[in-house]
Length: 212
Image 1 (cartoon, rainbow, N blue to C red):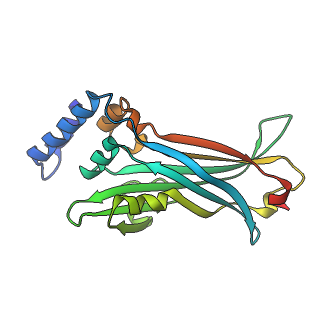
Image 2 (image 1 turned 30 degrees about the horizontal axis):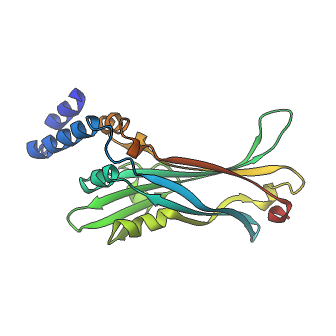
Image 3 (image 1 turned 90 degrees about the vertical axis):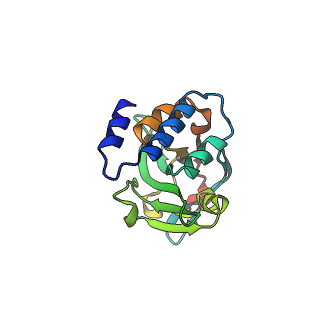
């Protein structure tokens, strides 16, 4: 916390009132571990399809953000999500072999001046320096922005040439709210909030019909 205060004093264009509001909000998060345990994520669709020589993933999420996360967004804090899909082949004599790994990174932020929501999507971690290189969309409401994250369709996860139709293979999918992308003081505060601990994982065995 001391380092955060020092950074505020040293930063150009220092705004005492703005910094104090941030510090108060961090303190409130840290002191209210029972606040709104309602962030949820559930897979309602999880399947793979073969199309044009590719193995495609279709995912539908029932994703809802709790009041603590929404409040952070409204106050100007960007929230990051990560979706990851991994194609693996069974090996009885060693660790399972990785056939393919794809990742999507989402950065969701509220823009007070325009009262719009911005969602950045990229195939690599989105930092402040890398936002311009990601795909960006603006939305009128939070629900519209979340609908893009909820629906992850036609996501190429492997070439069919890498898939052995006679082997045992499976796809593992993971989705989480990436707290590690928050500023350090907020990471500590969010660690006390169940509302911020949002993560799911699911595996799907590839059948002969899927890969032949």
